[in-house]
Length: 124
Length: 111
Image 1 (cartoon, rainbow over the protein chains, first blue to last red):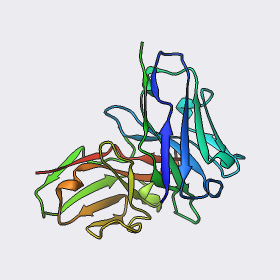
Image 2: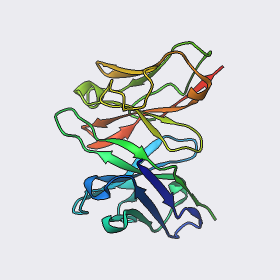
Image 3: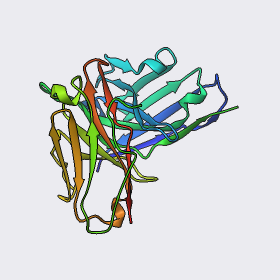
């Protein structure tokens, strides 16, 4: 059974840092792109960042570029999100998710397994 | 304001059929990009319900179905059950934004 378990969330002041972790089990992590997504209070889902199987390609949503860093350790079956210079608007539940890459014309990458999420609150 | 527009809420009685719409434009759904649907239940991991417009992953009941036409997509739920009360999100890709995007979400209430 595929399982993803996030940890590392909490309350932090604006400008502070947090490191989120995602422990993967039930599949071979090195076979998939992985993503972080978030859901802000009262708002919808937002994709945050993703990373290729071997870590050689990484992408971020514009709002976190230069502040967040996604990484992975396939040997430890783990995905990470280092979040620096946190802002109030970064508050939300952060999810890690396994990606199924788009394979052809018109196809769109999808997220077939998600964790339960970890809450990040940025507030003074 | 999301690029993919969903109604904020829908409701239905147990056993009824409800639909959730996802309206886009010529740079996303209308350009032929796939639409996926997710279910978010409080305190649980989000679940992929429909992928590639109308395909159900293994384990998803056939009460859930998806369709796409023009610049819109729809999620239909038949035989509504109390456990279906959740938030539902559509997802696609936008060529103008060069990014994956989600609809604003729809809260389904089972009366």
